[in-house]
Image (cartoon, rainbow, N blue to C red; front, side):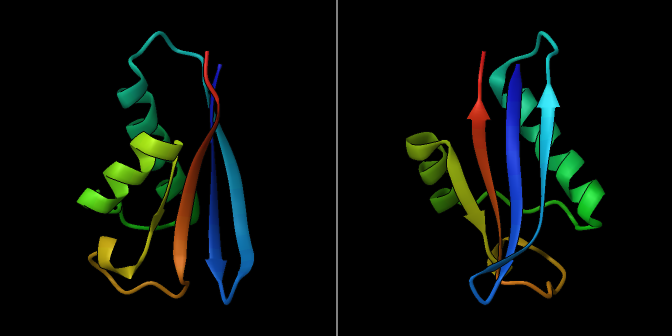
Length: 88
């Protein structure tokens, strides 16, 4: 089972969170991208752009934060954080 936890923060307070579960036989990369798309759908957000810093953080810690620089439209929160909490 693959699980990704997504959280929206503003002023160091978590506003919303969700966990996306995926038990398909896909690559880890596909599961991550599909989970981020599901999170954006649930939170009614545009998909964030993966900057080099996001990729490096995610590779190192299985976790990254998408700030306003990663979104094309304006956001009303400080950042979206994603974290892989379980992998098969």
